[in-house]
Amino acid sequence: MSATPPLLPPNKFAMTIGFIVNLAYQYADNVAFLLLAALGLIIILGVLDIINLAHGEMIMMGAYVTSITNHQGLPLWLCFLISTLAVGLFGFLIERLVIRRFRQDKLGAMVATWGISLILSQGVLVIFGPSMLPVPLPQWKLAFGGYSYSGYRLFLFGMAIAITGLLWLYFYKIRIGVLTRATMQNAPMAQGLGINTDTIGSLTFAVGAGLAGLTGALYAPTTTIVPLMGTTFTALAFITVVVGGGANPIIGALGSSTFLSVIVTPLSSTLGTFIGRIGLLLAALVIIRFLPMGISGFLRDLRRRKFDSNVSEQ
Image (cartoon, rainbow, N blue to C red; front, side, top):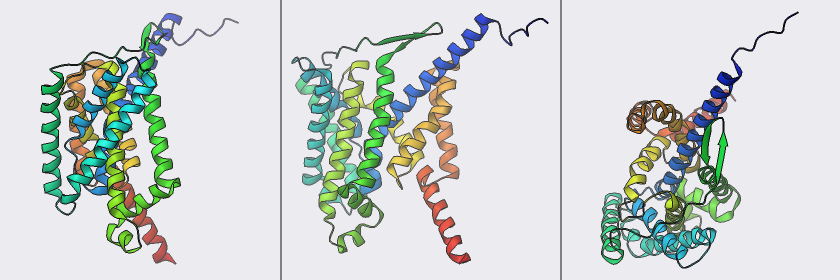
């Protein structure tokens, strides 16, 4: 009895598996970029209800600090840590000195962050010039199915997932994070219960700024470090935040980045980056049309309706 022939010839099968793995690699890369770009922005929006228009410039600051410290001979991991702390401290001071004065004026706060963004971008241009020394990209290479992959891109995906997990622990398992969630859900009630909402606001802005700085640090080896490099991240970060919604920053950022990457990855892979971006925008418009509060807002309303129906049945 003759053996059953394979569904695909061995070379065809290997090419198919290689293409699938390559598509999965691009998907992970897109998820990492959208998630890391959006986390700092969506946390500030979700807790403080402030749109931080200086988010891109804080990403740029992280890359600049990484370049400066790396060329002083420090290891890359230490440069990442210093960048996160430096930009986080900057965010803390900015919230204390500027943003807090506009806590009840959301439009004023947004304009203030826009002014900060202009000062940062132009100030960096004047002080450091049009570009910085590049940060060497770690030469981690992988190969499979005829495709070559950057191990550093996989490291970025792992970092994005790890940071999201740490943020979940911060918001749900650590006391200061639980107080932050209480402030996010009902700030006047939290203040009435004795929670110092001003301190929570400062820490939240510092965490958001620190995450932006970490994003810039992580992507510094992969991009040209210039004063306007933050614009590369800002547009996609805002799209991810709007689609995710600020009702739950972690679920919003994670859900939005994973869903949008499903749209942009095959389009970019087959039709090019430009078509992928157009598909991303169209998908965002459709989602906003049917889910105006974003993915996290939809899930929150769904839980509330389920809870109300259970109460009414009892």
